[in-house]
Image 1: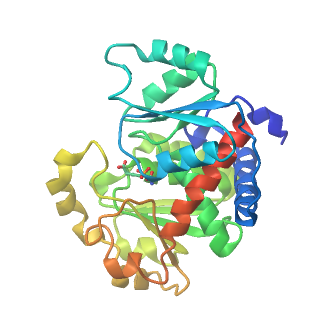
Image 2 (image 1 turned 90 degrees about the vertical axis):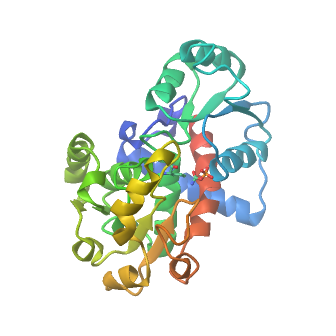
Image 3 (image 1 turned 60 degrees about the vertical axis):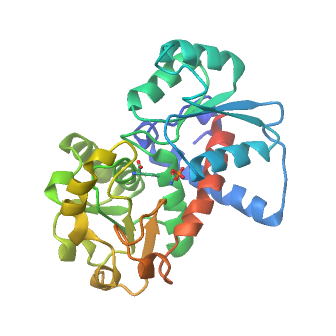
Length: 313
Ligand code: CP
Ligand code: NVA
């Protein structure tokens, strides 16, 4: 793969990238992390600017973009929807064209996937999806990096997502797993299974990569043999009104010591994109226990986001 093929590209979902390109981002992330550990400071974004658009709140994603861009000499500008006109007083198309004249790249976190697509289409600069209702691609790259740090290659490893199987994190993990040849299972009540369209699309990638995809509501069958158990909040940002319904649907899908034991794998790790609601989707003992890798994951957001920006700007 010629790395110059990535210049100018946007990351809206991993659907748009082939396995070789995703592996390039991963290997660059490892290199960037090593540099950071050695204290190597380069100035690869000197004189450059990035706009960070946030309709929803964030700790990790904002901090990762700001620090990764800033420590390379670039100037990040944070714009929440209290600051700018996005979609209310000004069309997304116009905002995109204005920002594209002033910035070298744009990050967007918000509700509609359509918005991030319009930003990419009209701005003329690389646009990064920092989470929408449908996808959270930068998270998924950090998750694969964390899995590879534990086990070496992710190919043939068994990742199992337990919980709201149709949310942005689960959907992104299904795409990246299918592309990279990692086996991926969603364990979730039927009401929260991802749509067939995405599953069928991912099956076509899985055929090429050797990944096995499975969706089940059976906990025992789903988690058996897992190398990594992953969960996320039961109520994603923007869905607060559904809280009572979700608790009813998902209570028996809590990740606790008993569920971790059902994997039958003492080396199984626990992953969570954070923020977590301890006592709901995961118990305190699991997230704080020796199997948990959640703070490595959080740190890896920064290294992977830096790699994505380096490769595309
Ligand atoms: N995991 C993640 O995206 O965290 P933030 O919502 O804090 O950015
Ligand atoms: N599914 C969660 C992820 C947060 C990082 C949400 O969308 O709120």
